[in-house]
Length: 185
Image (cartoon, rainbow, N blue to C red; front, side, top):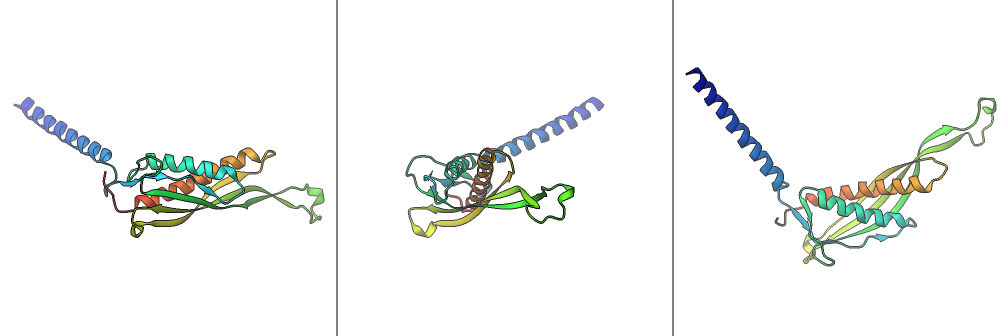
């Protein structure tokens, strides 16, 4: 009798765990609760800055974010609607941290007292999601950020900072577009 009662409780517990597990997997695979916003294609990024890496990095980051973000899907194709058009407007470099570069015996001198050792790259991007009817067009402006340490060779860390800023900007665009009303699965 005791064995039957324990078996019954265990079978109910196992059934409950199985139902909860299946329900959680089903909601995970179903995607975002509001449905999926379908982006037809991503147009080539326009670059109005002297940094050629900015457009390439943004294009790659946008594709990665739209392919992996729940609630947004990328159909593919060259001219499939809606089309996401982006433009890199500005790349700004500002100093975040400075360090003393003179020794203790030259403290009374005021020239070249401090040097920037950490810089921030701000990548400003404008985007426009074009649909067939202009009433559903969505526009916005985001600023992605990446940090750049002072090094003897500035080119490699600059490229990494631009990639980080482009990744941040692409993440913000994907977040803003995933808030749109769903267009179907």
